Image 1 (cartoon, rainbow, N blue to C red):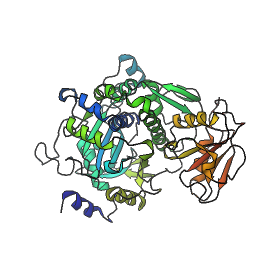
Image 2: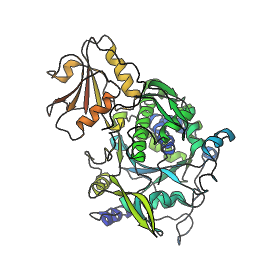
Image 3: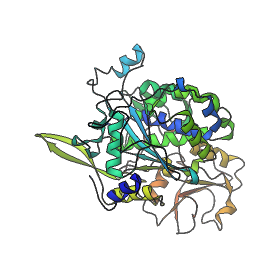
Image 4: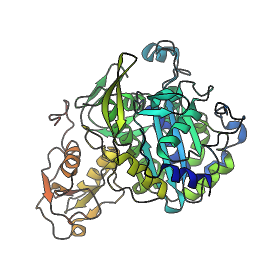
Length: 471
């Protein structure tokens, strides 16, 4: 029996029990996207360009030996740990005046973004699984704590390896490779990619992250993108870190749509070295391994990229007389999600949405249907794509819906689906002048939401205030 088989058997049917700074994961996820879209670009990478994560062994093991992590990818799947740190290293003096220095945040290393990217090359699929920063877990050799605490040793002190072992312990997923980025690295990656076009439903300000953007469609440079994926103090953020994960997924979906478009793919080889300078990877992730991965994923499309969150709920716990705000995994949903990932089975609806948080645009598959709109349907499609929705199905004629259940323009949602109305509400934030109409089961076979655009429809003007309804 292989190590992976033993690991999966160990976890079968066995349930187990800090700030999510989303910048890091965004940058690292961009790197995976670059790999997926530009296989030939890998060959421009040279050994001396790659910045490696120091190989720090687990306590009691030999150097270079971490029995529970690392190793080549299996033929059917590979798991990448994406770590983003709020380290201020590399920021300019002006930026440190805004964000503070490492000493200002306590001098403790924190990985405020933890995402596992599970790829199945043969199926041309990838799943981005986010772990809330405050998830209460058993850290191997250290006892129970927030999952963020596993990184306190930092990159130089084995933090990446300990996070990987922790993930493996609670999910049964072997982490094959790790990637790491800090704040300065994130900004550099976004700027190297030429920025990202984003559409947001209402103006957003946050003095803590220096976010100040208008509503509507606009261009995000690295600094603006960093502020956007870090903010967690917006109207309707009932559980701030959950809402931040949602916006991070949205940002990544918009980036993927850009990078996987035909007009961008030809530029990817020249971008790879610039991206590489901003991240650090484990020593096993060498040029040959990267080239193999890129070749296997060449041809993946945005519709085969899935975003999930470990099913969890806010809670509180008293430790040594001190109250701690934490997040606990929701059982058995979390174990079901981990099992399906390990076994390569469809994920269903597990981990799509988060408690008291609107669905992320990234998990909403929208189809745009043209009813003699005279070019308006493609404009709506672009708005939703840059809004971070899954628009992997191109604009279609209204006939593709079959007998249309409505006249004119509307947002159609599955009335029988648990999150159908919630998803329609998110789309309505971008198309506020369209009615939301429930339809019967079976009408929307390939999408979660259908947007029908008729001949008299016009996009609404950008909002000048925050969301009207936070219910």
